[in-house]
Image 1: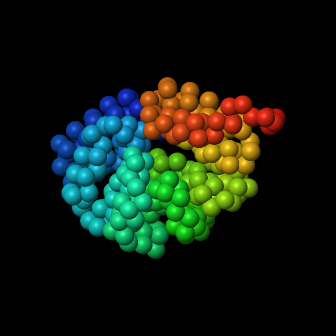
Image 2 (image 1 turned 180 degrees about the vertical axis):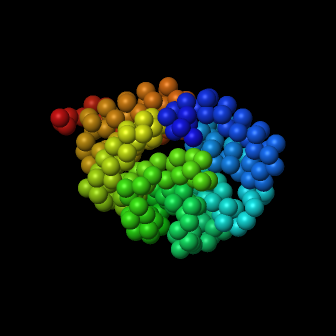
Image 3 (image 1 turned 30 degrees about the vertical axis):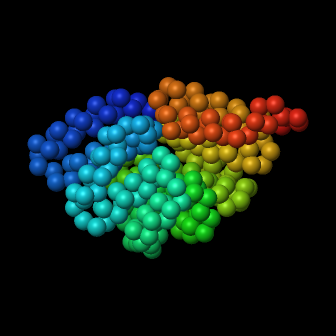
Length: 254
């Protein structure tokens, strides 16, 4: 987990493959699902990788129980909305999942909330964002892990900041994202530092802080290049091109 968390994606993939082989030899029934959990943070940054979609579909079909299947389906929802799923597909997947917010707060729940938060933010689903924000708020100071801590999935405050921006709660979003950034910096989690920088930039562009937003996007872009994060790189480009005024602000912020 640490290699991927800190941005060494190739090293993490090698370790994950070795672990999968050992688990397979030991007869571990969830070996394939554990591999999916470990590699998912890498896969979401490589939308052109056919292995990701195939791996998620296979894991969903072979899930050992309904709760694991729901978690893998939440991961699939994040994947699909990240790679261009429209509103109809999003709604259909939400219906198939049922009310995940009301599910037991077990080892799967927080990861599921993070996936749902990402999807709600991308789809600008404000009613869902509000429910998720209320549910996640008590966990703002914690980190999110998946599959018995096999994979790190960011500070809960990162997802809360994203939800708060979606809901127009700008001051609260800034506070959450500052908490998330400090959390990720303590861990040396470069990919998550970049993701939080992008969410901070998104917030600043919505509130007129163009110059600082550009600096944050530039810092995030450096990490995406170093780590090979094509999805986040596309988000950075989309933010920059959708706010052309940010490149040449009439009144730059300090």
